[in-house]
Image 1 (cartoon, rainbow, N blue to C red):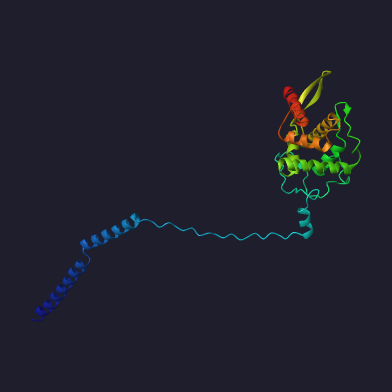
Image 2 (cartoon, helix red, strand yellow):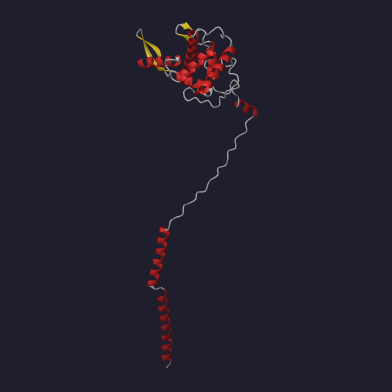
Length: 278
């Protein structure tokens, strides 16, 4: 009898375990798992097909640069106008080869009082308007003849000073631009890029084309501009003043007029001869 009771007790927990197993199997049924995975896939597909909202870019505010304060004396120098009328800050040299050889520092009176004559090539440190003023006084040699300036302003710099002011007034009236910018453009237009030198070989001289230095280019253009103005003044027999002929030569050179501009015609001839001697 004891054995039977023990067997019955042993059989009972087996039934309970089987019931629990069936319950667990019902909880984790494959149909429910498939349904959940299908719902998740549908949700992901809806998210992908939904229109994405445009992203609003945030504006990055850059910190302002704090510029150093200029000395009031330095500020006065920067605001200085040549002859007290025309600014030099807006003048642009378009030819990069001549930029370092055309001094456009702000100055009231364009005169250096000879402080740049101690060394040979320091003339490029002079203001370009002062170099034009000196050329008006003595326009230089042309071939074997010395072209002399008129006796009314020879060796008198104040007369050349007034001549430039009157010429600049004419340029400003006709072009409605800064006359200093017009003069710079004329110098660039009249500056030759090639020249001629002679080479002696076997007792015979041959012309050869060479590239001209920037300083030489500026020197030639200034010389030809003033020589053309002097020639026109002399040929007019007193009908035209030097400031009128100088303004005419500058305007003709800026317009690349080979017939009226002596400087541009000389440049054309020199470059043509250099091209033939290559």
